[in-house]
Length: 109
Image (cartoon, rainbow, N blue to C red):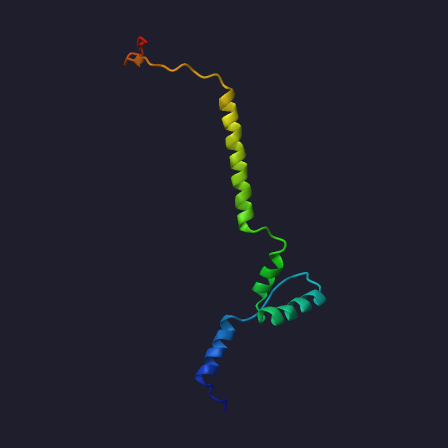
């Protein structure tokens, strides 16, 4: 007959089943995988996701860097448009009135 588990033991068993530490990676050398699993146990209490995140932080640019690059590219585009507009000849200001039929009546200066 099986020993009945206490409530705290049942809670721990459920937590383990829900947050089971596992990792599925293909084509990783066994030595590297063993090192990674041991390292995660020591540094992140077996949390492989945090281990991958920590390793990836050195190789992936932060989100802000990408955003800053995009903003700088947009600013450069705006400056180019301003230069193009500055080079175009200015049109004379029209103080006239256009009637419904399309006829233009100029005001006297």
